[in-house]
Image (cartoon, rainbow, N blue to C red; front, side, top):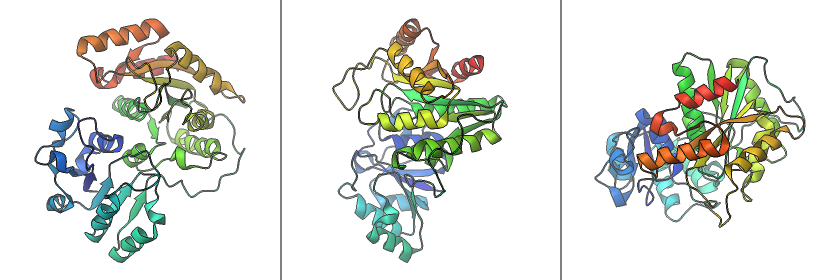
Amino acid sequence: MRMVIDAEGVFDGTGPKLALGVLRYRSDDVVAVVDSAHAGRNAREITGDPRVPAVPVVDDLDAALRYGPDTFVVGISPMQSTLPAGLRERIRAALEAKLDVVCGLHHQLGDDPELAAVADLAGRRIWDLRRPPEQDVQVGTGGLTHRPGSHTVLAVGSDCNAGKMTTMVELDREAGRRGLSSGFVATGQTGILVAGDGVPADHVVADFLPTLMHQHVCAATAEHDLVFVEGQAALNHPWYSGVSLGLLHGTAPDALVLCHIAGARDLGHLPLALPPLSEVVAMNEAAATWGGGPAARVVAISLNTGHLSASAAADAIAAVTDETGLPAVDVFRSGPAALLDAVLAAR
């Protein structure tokens, strides 16, 4: 793919998760970013992230077409079920320009009569990242264990947007660098685009999510000794805890890695206090055993300290280690090596 990422109006340094994830983990495939507010600069400069390529940020799709894309990626992630104002027109223009379209929104473009017709006329593909896999699922099939000798690790969080996908991708890549047999199972739109497939957990019928996740994890453990599963949301988040619990039960993990934003005291979307990290650890470990699952323990904390200075980040890491008794690592500041060491030691 040669991707242009649509981040109109939101590419401000932190940016939408999908856009940043693709820029970091499929950097060779991105040729431009669209955001008229930052046109004339480049993505690395705007984000301040050395892992992001220095691809141009341009005014609009016409400007992006000069870089020869073949795929238009909807990089924004609004919290709504309908298409935001202006996005429909940009998607239509991309299809008419003979680009495939990749979208991770709740709105399924392939089921949108207008856009599906435009795609058919242009002979282009729409890839809805949140479309569940087409496979037979029956509630209650399968067991709670994986291939003997394999080890499944699930990311859990104290909140949304705490780095669960990033942590699992970094662990998988570090394991690969060490020559270990490793795989990554994606459960969200960004992870699915990075990996090429996966289970969009928040679009699977709730009754089927645990069984579908079990099938995918078993398929991964049949091929790999280490399987790293992207988590979603948090058990302590009243809006999204159902998805978190479905993943926890369906993956039947052998170990957990807790992801947390350093210094966070409240949920990002709600004025509700976060429990102490020791309580978050305990609730995830307890829930993992409900229904006969393995006694999975939190083996380490993946701490997001990107908003802190180096000295403040070091203090935060030390404080979390003191509070929980677990190793804490920021995979961006120091790399994932120490985090993988903790996973392997627990194994």
